[in-house]
Image (cartoon, rainbow, N blue to C red; front, side, top):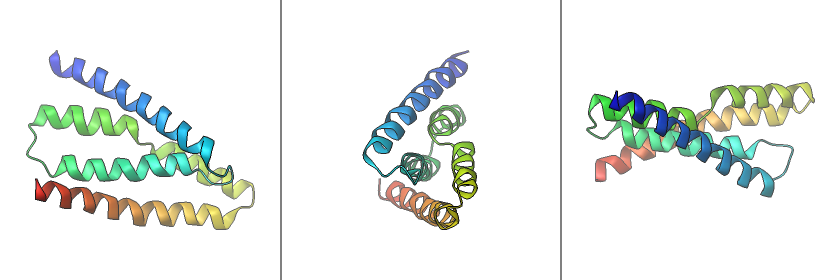
Length: 119
């Protein structure tokens, strides 16, 4: 029951943090590219790389990785925003969103793992 409560709280916190970070970045960035979602997903990849490299118990990993980071990051919004860019005939921005997200996401996850190795 404690693990379920942790998932509930951590998932809620991750979702709220995503809303705040995405909103803060989107208000300051150009409207033609989804910088908020991009920043959330790259920072989430780094955090998941870090957490995944730590010696966490199964339950702690479930709460931290799946609940918190899983609700913080968003694959579906990334895909929807990319599809919308394509619909608006902004194919270069759509392609850039895919390529940059994948390349920088992998780099961020590796960076998180590197940080964990130094702890």
